[in-house]
Length: 201
Image (cartoon, rainbow, N blue to C red; front, side):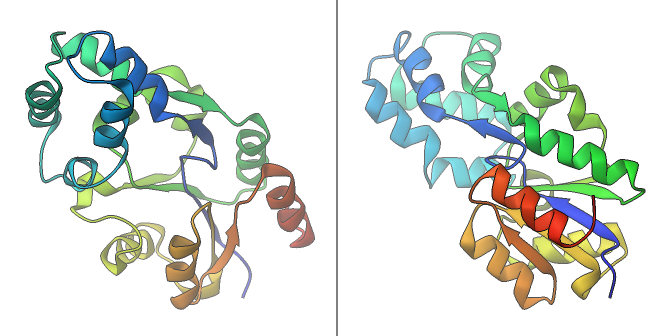
């Protein structure tokens, strides 16, 4: 079956990110070390609760303040926490080329509203997708099958008519198990070559 929709992960596929940037900034206004803050904000369980919608951004902020002693306000925290991204130009150009070919494209990401608000404001490419499947809006994170079902419902497609790009093996494996065509992103150059081998651009 011909590919009728291309689904992109966001982090490490379209944008790079580094939580250590946020940890270092937060540590300057906190009572604990950068390394301890990094473990707190970049790993479960706190981030999992936030990115599955079990807590909102105000609750997340208050929890961070309680644990770290961070003394900045919500606005300062939001800036520190979310300004950790940089674009991956080759992948952004790839999405634009696929869209120019008439292929619908979607973002499918484990993420949170602070990150999305920042990316939406900072990177114009983010508005050029046909739909967005974001973990915090659906109460589940990849590779939970529930979230993949949302993708199929939003795209109106199933099986090998979907091409899915992600940098995590467990996430692409879950897509492959549903019959999707998948590409594990190891670097932009390899991904682009695989796309070209499918005669899509």
